[in-house]
Image (tube, rainbow, N blue to C red; front, side, top):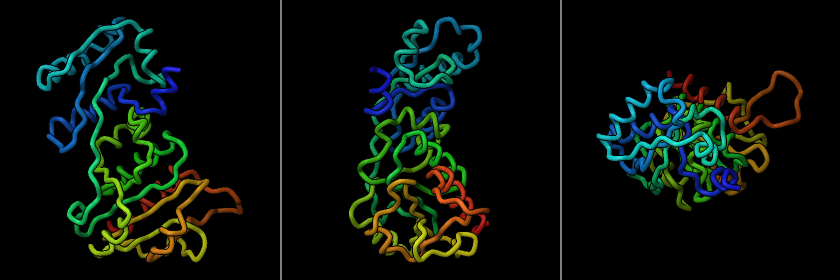
Length: 256
């Protein structure tokens, strides 16, 4: 039951060095609202095999004031939901997310909203691709999978902690329109192929989950609706992570 609670009910346990390095990079850059590391736990049987990583973490601990504690592997297993943590985890504070406002939107930028994704792993995979494509930030509704932040960080390879995240108000589309952004939604009805669409910045891209998609209220405010053409007849939707990857890198290609 512990693992299920960590997975879905507010995990602040970050597994493995990729996630922990993302946290430390934010602290070193003094990013606003950076998550604090309260304690690092490591498997005592990995003292030698992880000597380099532990040496780095001890140096960072003296710099940022967190504890490092050797524990047995059973203790690590009680905290973790994955098997790729390498015996090192971080217990962290909550992270405060900024409310979206006109002043938080860059000129001539690229932002993405993810709406209605059903699974934290799929959500994390989508964030990984969006971050890699060069997006300036992620827009989310109040209800989102960052409540399972540790799982999302691991599946996004740290991208969820590195990218700027904003929580949307009711008038979030108006904010982007006032800044001169084109609103582009991914859907089928009244759509053009993403490979033929004008995806020049500034652009606000909205991607929905494969089951629920984008709400009709949001679709009604789109300047353009784009679809991903398939190479054969196939009735099923791509996963949100796959769709996000294709769409985000098409924006990147259009703006090279």
